Length: 285
Image 1: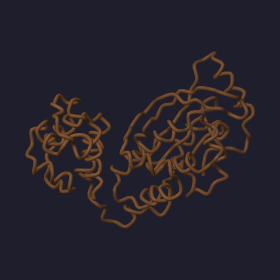
Image 2 (image 1 turned 90 degrees about the vertical axis):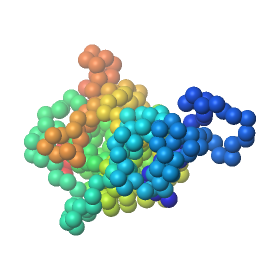
Image 3 (image 1 turned 30 degrees about the vertical axis):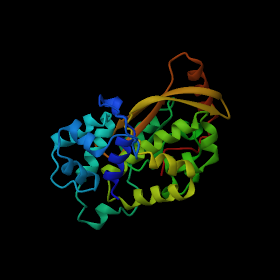
Image 4 (image 1 turned 120 degrees about the horizontal axis):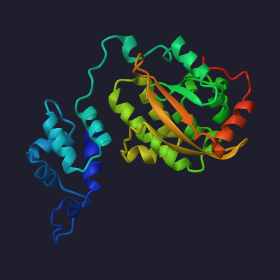
């Protein structure tokens, strides 16, 4: 089965007829959720047309049809974006290098200088697979010494699921981990030919039951800000706001910064953490 078909089936299974203004009917339903015919009716498209989409045959589908199906299935903006990426995937890169980079992307000198300048704010640069490409000393003090990990294994999602120190860092680990899976699913749809990304998903699916469960749930999310609670072994519990800032010169790289309100107890905790951070933890290599 195709990822497109799996996603559409999961979304219509999550809706009851009453949720979308259809009569429930007295007959026992063999499967949960909406039938294909009901989705087609709500979207005002032919049943055969919709069925072909669930079979993964999306060639030539229009933006208007995708938008109608998104409305019928009550998709969020992120889910609509994901539906479009699945139905209209980018062409496979022609060059071997384009489809399978030899190594992790380089971080520019200007970006490293920016990280060096953020002395009072934990900050790191993530690639499109959520690889940790660079960081500042305070980010290493907040999370762990990224420099102690081989570059090819220095991935934030992998660490969230497979590194006990990161699990212990988040009191609400399940929410953090589920959010990471939802973000990774969007990246997978945007880059379907990325072999490294596929390998990461396969590795985590094999090694972690929670990852398998959330991956099969088809949740997608593209949040670029929020708040995380940390139970840090040095400072104790702290709450930090985070923002994801896309680097315009490198569209596949994102700067993540963590901040605290000035004068707050969390700001004081960050100041203490800054003094505690080992001097050897410099921007990534």
